[in-house]
Length: 514
Image (cartoon, rainbow, N blue to C red; front, side, top):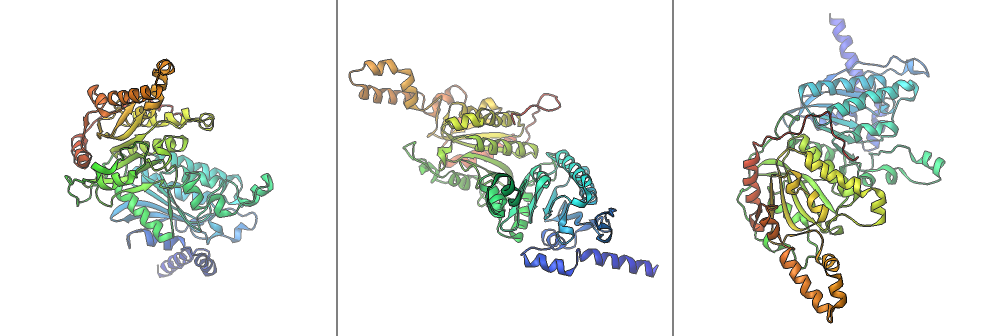
């Protein structure tokens, strides 16, 4: 028995070394931790329970018979983060470049299945050279097995991917199927084909960072949701995200001890919106004032900046936030912001997060590029997401709410439970200038003083339509509220709606305009 125990200890020690000390040194030289060091830095001390530590591949061609390492390039298991159970896997770049194999897939798929059965989040720490070429189609099939688990887990348990190294080819689709992607600057990369292939096929020259680095995917493509300066910062983000989320879709998000007065007023809000409706202001000021202090965690902060989405707390309860941002493109809805909002609304609905929407948008973006790019299809995603969502929904029209964008942005017709408006709200089919030009075209042509008549008609239109009171009179707005009381109104609204029960017609699934 003593010899058997010694053999086990030696095998475990070998597994702990991964690809060997020289490979570990190379990893550290790149400014990267090893797979086990990453897990230790992320989870609560002493809570990690590893599975599949001794698994190895059974492939013998291309010299692979001599390249068997315990664990086969991925560390998998269960642990706790801030006392809450999670499933975690970390690819080990020191073993065959972390290349994805049949055994890797079996290990990761196993913990994902257990995570779904147990109702706990999954965190993947990714650092891989891609599919293991020596295994041929088996490694490709292995990715397919992983994709299935990603899809089956979607909307059931939260999935977070942390891109800490390269990720190329088919490998990119697994993180793309998860709820959040955090990319580490300078070390995390994602692309379908690398710079060398692009140069050979298209003649374009590009470096790794420009093509698929954290900045590119956080600002241009929208593939990633967060960028972290280093691995430790990425782990902090994982913990912060999880603190807002339930363990699974059958639980409510966890409330923290309330630390901010639910009735707190902020008179700054009464003065924030400029009298000139063409002047911008920062919607983040409203969000920072209304929600619990310091609780707003913005998602996709650098992508489609004419819209804001993120997590926040209201009297200690987590909520999802959606807002137009007048500081960029006047808060207009375009293709990218529509995708951003629709995805976020569906995520919040999947994990029982009430949705608070702040509206200030002049409408959908006009233009040939937007029309040919499919603004109709993309804009319809916002409508679909809000209509489908059954969680509590409350909207606040801050200023502009024009045309189809008014309807899409959590209007009463989108099954929104409560719709409020500030006195500065402008709710209409279109802006005054456009409406006057259509309604009074002939009168303005015949007028002796067209400028004087235009000014008179504009004022009449504004007085009649360009305010929240006409909408309130028709029941489209539940109440016009004082801006400084917004926080209290939302706290009280969610207290009532917390026990809301709603459902959709039985069906396999709908057809979202993707």
